[in-house]
Length: 260
Ligand code: IPD
Ligand code: CA
Image (cartoon, rainbow, N blue to C red; front, side, top):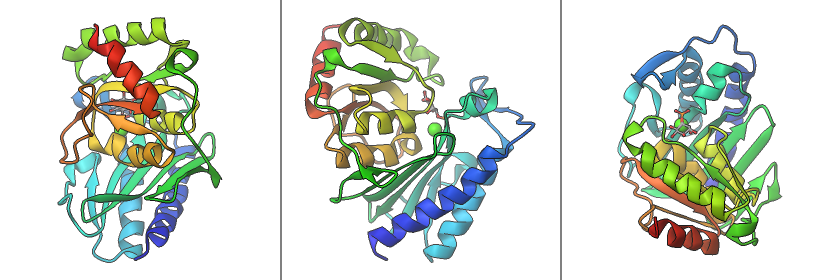
């Protein structure tokens, strides 16, 4: 199947599943690994619908998903990495800033990505080698230097042992850039970096389903994603730190972080 066909199946499935999020009511949070790590019936319904639609569109498709521990081989011919609702805490609390994130990997290579924010009606997409778009318009990381941009951050809420490290980084970012933002969805933070709305997005520990689609969108928007050690992000299912933005701003962030 051509990458463009895969992407169109992904965006169609996300737009349909977004209806479940928009019409959600009586949202009950259930704890997963701890009181901050929550899931709702809607996360599961969105994921089921995406798996159903993508399985119809791509016979033999495999899946690596946030909910229900469906973790197929990452090297499969057509593997979809799904975060059904990224920003579940926002979703539960009625803070309308969450999204559906789907990446498609072909033989272990990130090929297509689609992240949809149903509240802002923004669809971020990327195809490997063909650039990144928001609602069909090309996006690009900012050319502004780190000190003249806002920094998006995540607090790695499910890793309280990282609290001191996280807030040291955020303090540095607050002092060295214009300000910080903690909006509550790693996938949308990556899209904000790709669209040049923020200079850098940083978070000390997130999961593959949080960053897979956003990584391709950032790279196709001319940016880079690195770990806090300056390495490429892993693609083996492990959690990772992420610093994303223009090559220059990521390098500047890592230079400043190394002094902490
Ligand atoms: C979380 C959000 C949050 C980030 C966490 C993620 P979830 O994803 O992206 O912004 O700080 O690290 O796990 O649990 O809402 O899908
Ligand atoms: Ca997530």
